[in-house]
Image 1 (cartoon, one colour):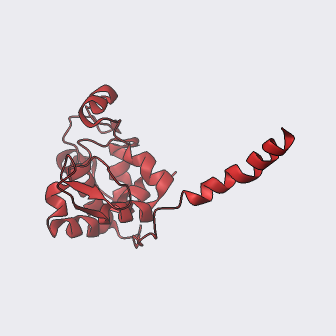
Image 2 (image 1 turned 180 degrees about the horizontal axis):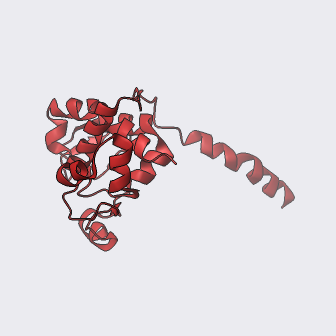
Length: 177
């Protein structure tokens, strides 16, 4: 029995090495001093992501302060939900709705950006491809079988523009402590 326990103690940690990291990361080339890029990234996030993905650890007034915008600019151009300037960047979709519609809870991008980092986000976004066999018509090399609504973006050059907008840098910048 002792040999079995020792064997498990020695062998089980090695399974973690077999899980792999999903391949090499692309560099997001984050420049948190480029305010214009960060502003474009915030606009990209609000326009393409905030309908499904919240950023509940970010507030609209902090967004204004960090990106050199006035509160009026944020309310006019980045807040389409009617939230007050001091409120968190949350979505209307409940966890139950997400479970029913997508089969899983939709991750909060403030948490993803903080835990995974800009390079992971950039690599994830760059590795979508058209896959007609999937429910949304796309798949991802980095995160296979992910549910995503990027069908139109995966087929267009517009996605490159979205990524160049400073999206990953903005998320990383906004989610710092």
